[in-house]
Image (tube, rainbow over all chains, first blue to last red):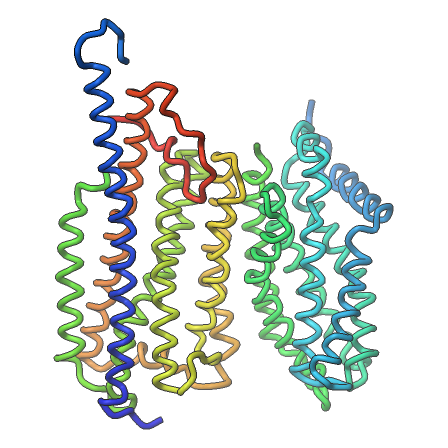
Length: 62
Length: 228
Length: 248
């Protein structure tokens, strides 16, 4: 099997490395989505905590 | 109350499964019929009257594999649906006995399957006469059956208490059974050749090793599958 | 806490990977026999090795889960297998690209790496459906662990068997290449291997951190909100985060 010249082999090698990077980035993007959901829920909870512990209503929040 | 001797428990369990099968004919007839029908399908699909060598080998083992999967699916179903698991767990018997009993039952079904399928294969599709191939073939069948029985029991126990058990059973067992099919097919290739060759011992050793490893693993892990 | 070492890990991974890429493109010599195409091996083979080790690691973590009944080990096992699945997809795609470049076909059956990989991926593809199909979280975790162990044992055995079956048919290009590497290539190869391994560990920690944070969030919600905030438990393929433990 004779070695492929650079201009033919080049795109293949590039494609392989690009696929690799793309998959990692895709994974990071999905995880980023989860992270923002966590951030949002954390915000909601902070709000909830401030409400229940807030202007004293005498109730034992916990 | 001490546990009854393993032999007694094993015999009792095995007798129960075989008796149920004899009365309901759930698995074995379907497996046997399936294999014969598949041979007919192969004849039409491949457009060949008779096969030799690696083609014959492949057709035989793939068909046996798919027929076995039918049996694997049904292996634990009755126990799961009718509370057999709980009954067994309440008894003082050693849990790995259930594993052994189920594996032996599956082995029995496979033997009956092959009693039908192999002659059908020889009759319908195989070109060289099966006579000289028979002793070697029996050895390979034995080793392959043990492999299917071990993996089938493990997978059956894993899949039976899931929701999509009819799908998961084959999905789980087929990749794990590929080495068995591979080993068995390679082993019987020279047997089915036009000028019959010798049985390759290497593949027999591989099959035996595979069976041993997964039998040990199944033995070690089975307890965890039975708990609830 | 999983996030503590994450930054350092991510940084080293970045450095290692970048260095590897640079060396692959500018320092490693062109293979006399295979030409420029050979450079795919620097990413394909390390990915393959790390994926297989990842699956085996998932099996080992599953053993720990069965031994200690600690649901954290189940989570670790799940994440390990999940990450390895992603890497495995990369292995198959890069292997396919190489096959197309070298042989003209998108798939070749005589490369034992690719074939045994396909088989292993088909097996592990059933991991999440299996989990999803079992509702009770404890039973789900236990069945998943049994599967992870059996599959983990299957990985090396399957690899060996497929290799044996193709040995005498065609020359095993991939394995031959990674076996006898001259000086510079060897350096780059091992660097690539270390980089990909670092990447795996980083992503594992990354996902563990995220799952752990979700678990703590869930616990916090229960603590603060009481019963009305408890959403009806949805069926999920991932291990139950509620078991991971509460606010520390």
